[in-house]
Length: 209
Image: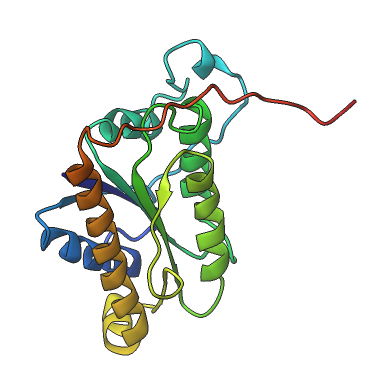
């Protein structure tokens, strides 16, 4: 089994990556792999609402990392989203990436139900808002949101500061990894004994009458 983590930080080796690595260490104890894809280093185009993705196989007209994420996901059993707080919100490139990923794939249609979690990182404030924002992507994608013993939030300006001073955050990440590993193992153990849910096509209604 394998999990894909999307690192939405502009720093590929910052606190976000270290928090993701702690989750990965716990997954590894259950022989579950973790691959990390760094999103935040380059600008990512936002959605133009051109709707071409609805007629060309879930592919966005911007042929960039967003399309490659959807292709990669087919080989994974779980998903981790992590990013720092930029003015109390998701960094712009990562938000553009997630918006287009979900919109172009009809909310990851056909990929779930699989476990997924969201991690927020901050120097001082804003991480709870990050977890809420990232959680919105999980809530509408038939994914099984994985939680920990407290908010999936860590603090630190550097990885060293995070590991040495945010002892609760470190423990929270470890517990998060253990919970995700357990859910993945339960799904694997169930095998074909418990059939997966069959989803109906989501009806879309407008509230302007």
